[in-house]
Structure formats: C-alpha cells, structure tokens
Length: 294
Image (tube, rainbow, N blue to C red):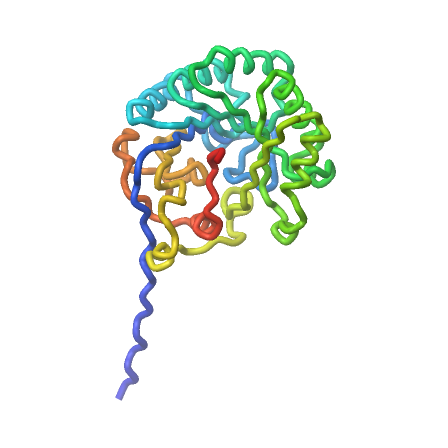
C-alpha cells in the first residue's frame, strides 16, 4: 500500500493594511537619475542609464493637483537626485502653494545660487519648505565609502548654506552598519551639526531596507497574524502614495518596482488596502519606520 502523501504546507496569507487617508504624496521627480551611486540606495540610482525615467513637469503638476484635491497634508520630492531636474524650483513653488513640501537631496548640487533660490521660495511660500540632506556617518571616510568621494564635504557645505539662510535642514542618515547602531549615531550626527554651526540640529535616521542595491539582505514576510500586534496606522502605506514614471506606487521605498505599481489611473483609485508583500515590508513592521519627516 502506498504511503500517504505528506500534508500540504499552507503559506500564511500576506497582511493587508487598510488605507486611512492621503497624508503624504511622494514624487519621484528624477526617477533613478542621480549624480551619486550610493552603495545602499533603495532604488539603485546613479548617473548612468537610470532604469526609471524622470517625470516631466506637467505630470508632476497633475499629480500634485489631484493630491491637493484629496486633502494631502505633505508633499515630498525625491529621486534620484531632485536637483538634477531642470524645473525643480518652479515645481517646488507649485507644491508649496498647496501643502508643506520637503525635498530629499544629497546636497551636492546646492550651490550659492540654488541656496538663494530655495530661501526665496521659502520666504514667499504659503506653506513650509523643508530640505533633507543625506549624510550617513560623521566620519568622512565612512560616509564617503558609502556615498562616494567628496560627498561628505559637499553635503556639509550645503547644510551650512541652508542654515545661513534660515532654512533648518534635516540631516538624514541610513543606519547602514546595524551592528553599530548602539554606538550613538544620532548623538554623533547631532554633534557634527553643532560643530558645523547649526544652532538647532535636526537628525533623522532610517533603517536599511532590503531593496535596490541591498536587495536580498534581510527582510521577510509579514502575515496577517503579525499585523495584529501593530497599529496599522504606524505603517506609512496606510496614508502615503508615491508617483513615478509608470504611475502610482504603494510607498516611496518601493516606488518604481513593477510589483509595487498599483493598477490604477489616478491617486483617488489608489486609496485601497495595501498588501505587505515585499521583504522590505518586514522592516517597516519591525521598526515602525516612516520616510516622512516626523
């Protein structure tokens, strides 16, 4: 008599996060076009042959207009490097007429004229302008090993230029060496800003996500049972959407990835539950991390 077949192992279903309201719109304005090629980049951006195209200005204005009609509370410009976009200042001005706006940058393209332009925008805007400058370690050699030679010095100069004009930048770091996460990275970055003359230092630290150039390193599956132990409102996909070439995506971490693209033609159609089906979703579940400023 044949042995009975082994029982099938059922895979727990993916969790799905209810969508609450559109708080944040992320605009991947330059796609994956960047002047740096950071080793940990979540979307593998770089200066050569970007795999995700930039958005044209008309598309950006269209997405922002729709988001404003839906009551969006914050708008974020990201990339790639947003300051490579030839119309970045007019687009920031368009956004600032409708909601508080943040631009995420490596800082290397913020020269004196650009800093002046940003200060003028902020002074005349209806809503607040925030600038987030990426710098991953207060040690020059460690930072530049991640972001490229000279990135540290140029980012710090940008921070000083912005601070001198009353724009209090947010230094944003990725905790690349998680084994060293207890070494006081926040305090060391804060000290770096104080030593650079920034009177009110602001620091944001993000975890490393297993996507882009570090895909396959960590992460995992989030099941519906796991989600019971967490307020779904802590996950940014419950109140954020990203737009990039190709349409609407579930969140800024996965923006541009085919599996994260939503089968919709408008933001209004995208405000539906979000399945946590990517390995990076586990990092959000574990840490409660949000790409937003808060």
